Image (cartoon, rainbow, N blue to C red; front, side, top):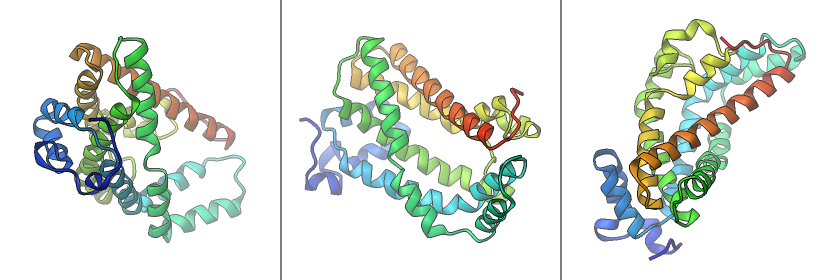
Length: 249
């Protein structure tokens, strides 16, 4: 049965292939969960969950994100003082609704891009065969798990430290390098949650593509590196145009 958009998708389906059963199973029995999902893939319910959770997380962390942006832009050599004052006001008086709506509006983009890259890598480099919607589907499931983990782990760390740079990875040992260090940016992306999601993605890709676990893991690692390098590259370009001095370390 191929991916469909019907009323069952909203309530999660029925029986052992229900999305309600599959999502928690991704945590304690990921291979079985992905096999069950692959037999009866659904998109609408995971899409709704990702949009809602992304919006909530963006709203919950907007104060810390806005503060980090302000701290970065303080070193800008081209930003007008009025713009800097506005950024300061944004983090001192966060608009939670605006941040939530913005996060929800763009919440699907990271998973969609990850699925596109993974579909290309798995198909053309490792000989896998599957429909794009199946790859996107497992990417959505893993996205839900990642967002839940961020709520449970990263959000409390941000609240305790008052910083969006709170990390449960190697970045915590290199905090003195600062956000203008490219090496530090890379470490921020590859924390413990990210590594867990890379492993889950590798297992998922091996199932949906019908390839070995080694090839599935390779697909996941390559996809992650492409996306992280792309995101860092965009950040570097943006900060360079803002007149912010960057360093490799």
